[in-house]
Length: 383
Image (cartoon, rainbow, N blue to C red; front, side):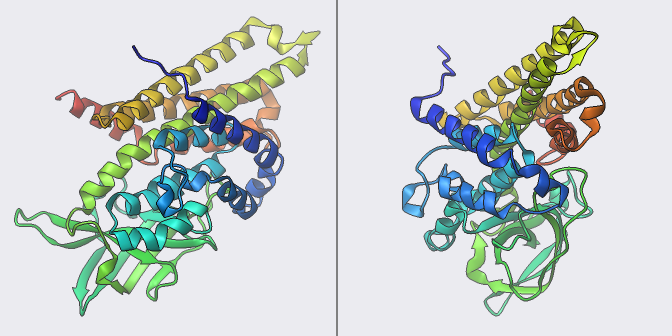
């Protein structure tokens, strides 16, 4: 029998993060967002709560939890703000998780304690300016020379890559050609500040304005041969695994945004008067909000199912793709409907739904577009 009730430990965590999001994030995040400023103080407090270490063992400075715990935290943060939620998601599932999954013992002990504490953020350099969904078309190269990897190339849209506390970026690069003539892609850890590694200025974005997103360039950037992450030539397979897991986390984030739209719409519908009564008394508004709640509820069940299969050690690629596809698309729908319910105020940045509307669209693009998710689902069905 399926039972999606949370354990007491998970429920306590969820409530703790919900309180943090309401009490600490909500009152100040709009100001960070308007200034396009990274919220260092909020991130520091998230680190003190242990959020960056949630799915990692205590021996590496983690909290000894699991991936479900991380996703619960991400959903609760996203109910209030997506910039903060994506900072956590990218730092853990893309920044720290590759090192935990594929790193040597020395690499884990070197990097994970500070990544788990939130003192340091990690980033994952996969996407390239001309690559997009075609991640196999990697053009960044790395050649071995006198015991060092010499890296050349460019990465685009990399989250957490240029903050004052960013400590490393794991980059995928072509390190040779396989016997079958295909590119040999490997993952290499590049510490921040390495000569030849240049971080561009922040992008001017439609949404996620309080998160850090940049283009990276490598010009004869040299790092030790020991900075290879996992096996040489296994970089492509590694990041496919990381993206499968990350899709569950993005689905949780999208669900949080969708639920936040419900929260704000219910509150507004009770307060806003029109034609002599609260607009929540009108069936047109009631039905909109009921549909929004139904979508958020269903999205949550989808990512719970994917997380459940992952934690059991069962194949979960299809479930993760379904969760990511559905939740991201309903997040966009809920954000649009919430803005409509708020009317003119929904177009004003002082109202959270305006921020949610701006933040929602990227969820259909990042960590695999909706089109890629449909390809994956069809492939899993044998088509």
